[in-house]
Length: 427
Ligand code: ADP
Image (tube, rainbow, N blue to C red):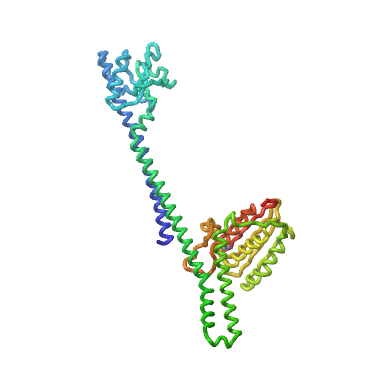
């Protein structure tokens, strides 16, 4: 499956997941509202029945319409406009609430209009264990109406609603958990895909790196098999030298891969010494890189500030680091290479930056270029050789010196790698 369709599937999956979560929470909220409404209507019916029966007992013929008032979610008052027998009231409330399946603690209070006071208050617990009292909120403790009335306060309403909605809550949690597991599985699949692409790329590169020398050796050895070659010692020597050089080249390649593959903090040993950076950089440029860059019509510019910069580091590894960065700056450039090297001494150490006008690196790939064997995928095009080990080595050496490497890049504009080697770091 192509990367593009995978990306589309991934985006669709994310959108669907978000949609499912939003819908679930929307319905959960609706269910909470509905549960509150059901509770309200059950309590209203129960308290209305209580009021009707109280009035009937007092042989009072007043109408009971709209005598139940919901003050807020947890508190209800019922106007009676008659004397209230608290023992009967308690019994009736309990019976009516149970009849409506309201199984949560409540507090009954009775207000007397003559004394303008609360004349009775009792906490009724549903589980008959220890009875905890909940004081009535002060706003409800004063007489709110000009009549006799009783109030019922449900302090544990939230717990009751949560219990009633436990199925909803559990199913939502299971759904969220399932989505998390799914997201993790997708993440693993993508990572595995990326790793297999890197592996495939590495094998492709290895094959290309080895194919050319092997082909040269094959042709040269076929020439050497010709009996007439002994009559021409100059040709013989020439082909023998080619075979020898290619064998050395192959051995070096194998050695490089093995060395890099096992390079780790415990394998690389630093031999630090104090040296001037300028001659080291200029020497590499003169001996190797200037020729390469000039042959492609480009140029390398160097800037040292100050002119002489003393570093305490492993000379060989630092030379390799600079070499690797310069190699890349030339390799990954499709036009005339223009390379700028800046070496600056700061109060904490030395900064060496290598800037090129090459193909650049996308943000997406920038995260991975320091990983072992990582090469930016180029499809089936293997025009630039490499094993994806250079930058990993560069970073390792910087870290071993107590420093670091940073990269900034823009596609089709170029890249800048900046390494920092601190001063006075004991190895
Ligand atoms: P190699 O060059 O052997 O593939 P490196 O570890 O040196 O391995 O680089 C890893 C990858 O980072 C390269 O394959 C290349 O795609 C990318 N890269 C490194 N340096 C540059 C650069 N200066 N410009 C553009 N791409 C680069």
